[in-house]
Each structure stands twice: as C-alpha cells, then as structure tokens.
Image 1 (cartoon, rainbow, N blue to C red):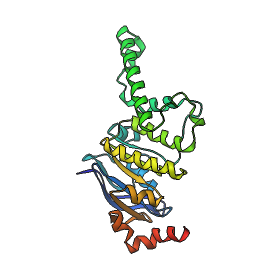
Image 2: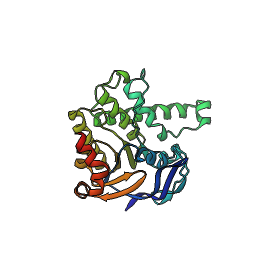
Image 3: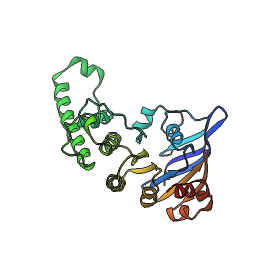
Image 4: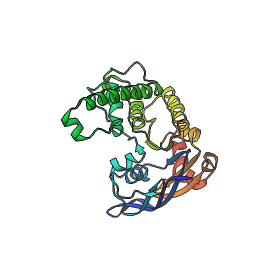
Length: 260
C-alpha cells in the first residue's frame, strides 16, 4: 500500500528542471532510498513533497489525500516529517529542549485556557509537561543519547548532533520520515549505528525515505532504490537490481567507484 505518491511532479527554476514529471510511490513500512549525482533533484524533491517549495506541476498524495500546496506545518501534522542536510540546533539550549520543541504538535491547550490560567489549566499543564519530558527521555534513550539531556547542543559531537536532528523529527510522531543525508560527516562506527537506528525506526511502524550519497549505507539499508538524474527517474528496483543497472553505473555508481 502506497503511503506517499507523486504524480507527474515537476519543479522548475527558470529554464532548469530540478524535478521533471516524476512518478514515484513509497510503500508503507519500507525503507526507500533516493540516490543520484549532485544536482539530480533529490533535496528539491524533499522540499516540494514537504511543502517548503510549491511544485511547478503535478500532485503529491499522502495517505491517499492530496497535500499539494499545503504548508510544511500542515503536512507535518498529517505525519509527513523530514530532516535536513544541515542540522540547525539551538546552540545554547540543552539537548532535551530540542526534543521538546518537536512535541509541540501534541499540545491541545487553547489560547483562552492559557490566558485565564485556571486551576484546571495549571493541573493539565503539569500533567502534559511530565508526559512530554517522559517522551523526550524515551526518544533520547532510543537515539543512544541518554545522559546528555542537560548538555548544551553545541557541545555534542557532530554525529550526535545529526542524531539529535533525527530525534526532533521523531518527536513530531511521524508516519513517514524523510531523511536527507543522515550519515553525512559520520565516521564508520557512527554510520553503522545510524543504520541500525533506521531499522529501529521502521520497526516502530514508521516508513523511511532516505537521500544519501554513502553507497554502503544505501545498499545495506534499502528495500528499494529510486535513482534520479537531471530531475528524472532513470531506474527503480532492489539494491541488487540497481547495482547491476548499466544506466545507473554510467550516471552515478561508476563515477563514485572511479573516485574511490
């Protein structure tokens, strides 16, 4: 069953087609990787799907609902959440505060309840605060960051900062998580942990779409792979099928092997 579909999706910047007439589906419960050379349109695809950029043409469907043109927060409320290439953190805030920001969509307190500051509101606030702290602690433990709750985010190692970005996204309770180059800058040990984490996310019932240049990660973690080149889909299949596809080798994999 498809949880996400794009139909003839295009995004143009002047005469440049960053994404061109893309038909793609993400199946519920899978880990799908989107790969391609630099400039292939991978991050632009994420931006359009999550509402950060409007499409030039085409449609995006999530859970069977047309979400084309919705704002990022409305899309996130439906359970479609993303991470970013660059992890932007509040450097002087403690780690747990970052996870709490991702839990804001669970808040049901109205403006009038806050302004009136009734006893019911105060009791409700304390209860919800305790629940949020418990959820945040569980997420940090899942990420392997237990014990760093009160550490300033700026003092975390780079790999842990990347994981914290994933934690903020998980706090928003996604059904589908789009991860943009999650292992960038990680050493081998950190990348291996990130791969086990992605499998753990899937085991929690969250579908994962991954944009990544690290081919070891892509081939090890993916159920299926979609390959983009100049904004167009040139191949789709299992890792073994993609590894043997000559067009993919010419456009991307062969270049990577030559560089290596």
